[in-house]
Amino acid sequence: MNIFKKTIATVTLCAMALSLSACRSTAENLLAKDSFKICCSFYPMYVMTMNIAGGIDGVEVVSMSDPNMGCIHDHVFSTEDLKKIEGADVFVENGLELEVFNDEILAAYPDVKIIDASANVKDAYDDGDEVNGHVWTSIDDYELQITNVCIELQKADPAHAEQYKTNAAVYLEKIDALRSDNADVIASLNGVGALVLDETLPSFCIYTGMDFITVETDHENEALSAGDIADIISEMNEKGITLIFVGAGEDTAMADAIAAETGATVYTLNTCMTGNEEENAYIDQMNENFEVLSDIIG
Ligand SMILES: [Zn+2]
Image (cartoon, rainbow, N blue to C red; front, side, top):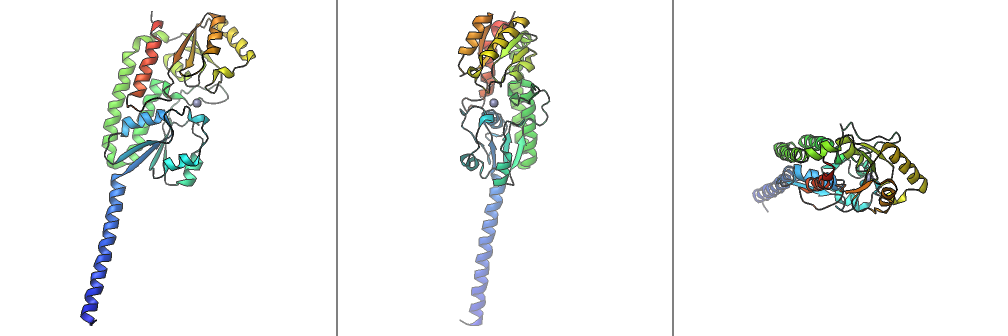
C-alpha cells in the first residue's frame, strides 16, 4: 500500500469512527430527550401521575406495586421492586413515611429523583405517636399532591413541562367537580361523629369536618382486642357516635358487633388504595363513597 492509499484508508476509518460515534451520541441524545420514565410507589400515586403525565409522547409512567397490593406502609421492599424502578428518572412517592425504603432506592440508583407528593401537606392526622400519611382521601390534600407532583415533574423534565401543567390543570378541574358535585354530602358530614376503623379514612373525616375517633388497626380491624372494643363502645356511647367507617374489602364482623352494641350504622368506604388502572379511578371511587354516605343528608 502506498502512502496515498494508506492516507485514504486512514481517513476512511476515521470518518467511519466519527460517524459511528456521531450516531451513538445522537441515539443517546434522542433517548435522553424522548424517554422520561416515572415510577410511582403504589396505586394512589400511580392513578394521580397517570393523569398528570399519561399520554405524553416520550414519557412513561409505571407503578412499582401491583394495583391490588394494598397499602405501601406494610410493604417489604424487594429486588423485584428495584427492577421496576430501573431506568426511572423520578420516583413519585406519597411521603409522610408511608414509603420507608428511599435509602435502598438511592443506593441502587443514586440519580433517581424522589418526588414527595405530600411535601407541604400540613393537616395529616396525628395521634400523638405518629403522623398518619394516608392523606389522599382528603380532597384538599389530594389536590395539593397533584400540584406538588406536577411542579416537581416540570423541574425534573422541562421538555414536557407545559404538558404536565396542562394535564394537571385538567385533572384539578375534575377534582374540583368531584368536590362541588358532592357539596351536600360533604356539608352534611360536618360535625358528625364517627368511629373510623381504617387508617385511610381519618383524612377523609378531617376534610369533611367530622368529629371522629379512631384506633390503630393497620387496616385490619379484626385485630382489635376485647379491651379495645369495650373502650370504643363506651366512648361511642359517651359521644353519641352513630357512624362506623370501615375500608372496602375488610371484614366487617367487628364493626357489625360494635354496631349491634351501640346502634350505630356501618358504612363501607373505598380507600382509593387499590383498583382499576383507569384515569378516573380516584374520582369514581370517591363518588362511590359520597353515594354510600348520601343518606346522611338532611
Ligand atoms: Zn397504610
